[in-house]
Length: 281
Ligand SMILES: Nc1ncnc2c1ncn2[C@@H]1O[C@H](COP(=O)(O)OP(=O)(O)OP(=O)(O)O)[C@@H](O)[C@H]1O
Ligand SMILES: [Mg+2]
Image (cartoon, rainbow, N blue to C red; front, side, top):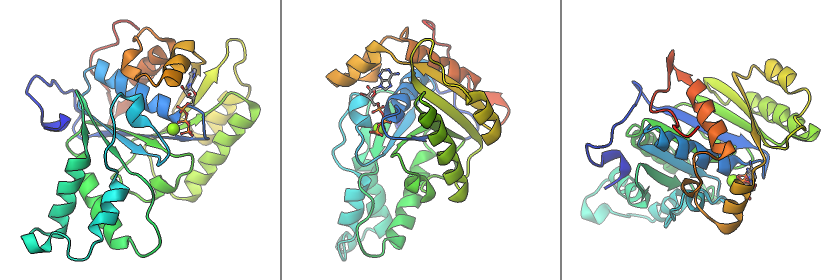
């Protein structure tokens, strides 16, 4: 049974509709780490169930969350292109896709995960993409919170597989170039017509005393609603090196504390995201 339908002890703090957070940024700036930290902090606040979406074909969000993907959506899409698949059994193509996507969901305590896999190969995938978009949007409705870990580019977001992005998070490193890259990414998102409700800039891997300059100006220029700096942290680095899950890191960790405080500032439709505060933060 998937996290969305599990027992009644699941106390959900869902808002009227769901809240979708999409994270993107330059390679290696901590997108996957931040996505996993958001999932861990939402769970800690009992803002559950969370749908974690791994939209980076080279990512390891599953490992960072202590689970393992068996089949990606890309793989299912390829398989579903087999002529006549499922037709002999009287199942419609949509039902078949729905079934396969549900089967590919990695189910864990308080969250489920789907991995998008590789983008489509040559040939026309419009039909498949529309169908998959429909099914994924339908599936998303079961979760009050959705966290999407994207690849460094914005292509995946531009394919509009998600009904809406409530919060777009642009990650960067604290170097001068890192901050400029956030600006470029923002310009690109505008050019590509990526729509979102709120914008956050998260500068990760900040060393004490070396906070980047010009950050507040940038945030003002691009109309960022939130600006967050996360410290470089040995606990996170070590867990990454050892392949340990985010949930194994105590909530007293400075990066998790930063993310939890960030969540407490988020609001949707005039309401703050509720849930239980991080007691250790
Ligand atoms: N605040 C931090 N302190 C210490 N190490 C960190 C921190 N954030 C991320 N890392 C480490 O930096 C590395 C890159 O992080 P991560 O994989 O999250 O980046 P990414 O943006 O998802 O990368 P990619 O573009 O390759 O997908 C990882 O080894 C991770 O453990
Ligand atoms: Mg990543």
